[in-house]
Image (cartoon, rainbow, N blue to C red; front, side, top):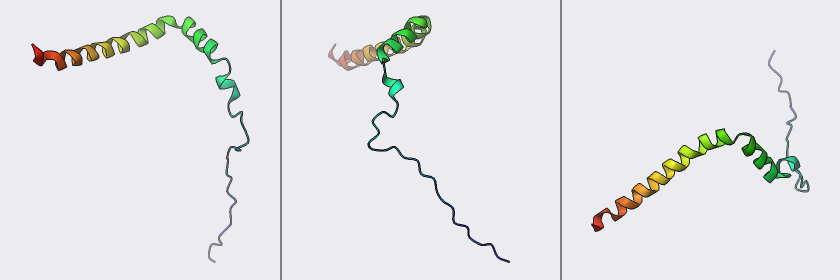
Length: 72
């Protein structure tokens, strides 16, 4: 006895082009949500952002000095 092929139906998920509210709660009142998160966790935010900003500033300053080094 051989195997008989079985037809399977595929399930396809798609968003309707007429559906405008895909994720309405995500963007609603986003500024107050960000303010609330930062004000609750300002120490963590500072400890995360300070080294990143400091490194970026140092690299930009170093590159600018390197570009102008040949002038002296």
